[in-house]
Image 1 (cartoon, helix red, strand yellow):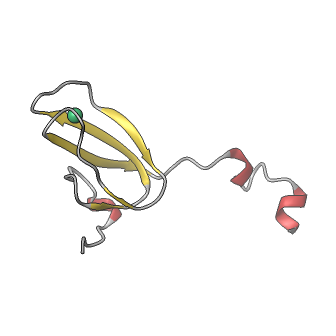
Image 2 (cartoon, protein in one colour):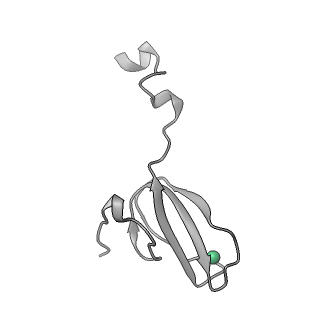
Length: 82
Ligand SMILES: [Zn+2]
């Protein structure tokens, strides 16, 4: 079983690692076929291999940005009361 990782230590994760939800920066090597880019992991998952390269790594950058409807500053009164 993959072990859960501390969110603050979720850097340079390899495929096969159980990753918490969040926005990740992905880097590709062997070959470096694309620039580092962000992906959103909506729910904890085992990180996948890249289809193109052999050394993909995932670094957790931040929490997922919540939709405006979930912000306490913009919720309608109806939403708060239900
Ligand atoms: Zn790749």
